[in-house]
Image (cartoon, rainbow, N blue to C red; front, side, top):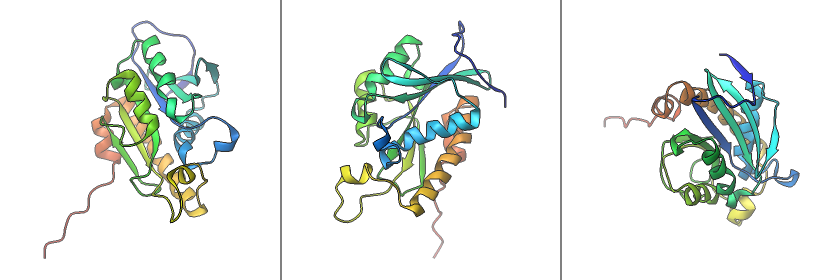
Length: 208
């Protein structure tokens, strides 16, 4: 796979935006709510991307994967305002919602579990909902990274803004690693193939 960095905009090129959701600032760096940022960091490490710059409401870096330009994005708006960072980028590059991949945490699936979806509601995630509210289109790919439900006596806020346990961190690292080839699959083929290849398979019920 040929990957190289470039900030020049090519006319008529194919392009995708991969946005990882999280909160800016060192105090949030290792919290559950920032697994989207962690995924973007992992992608940039594997793809050798170092040309980060700050523009408007986001940190951005451009690269090419499979001859398609990819814009890696970490919004700097805080989670609940993620749409304020994503919408202007889609507009600037004249892209559709279907050209967007959003990686985010998800409490509704166990820690370290992944789910890839092509569209849908915000599912209670305020960062995803902010993007929906701004771009008015649900047809973007979601990389859902499970962080599990809050521990007993934990509020949702305390849960998402707390770090992972050592055990769960290993699961998260494994999940993020597995999503890197999933991103490459979406870029090279499409979301349907990525969902078929990388979503966990449902266990078939044994005949009684």
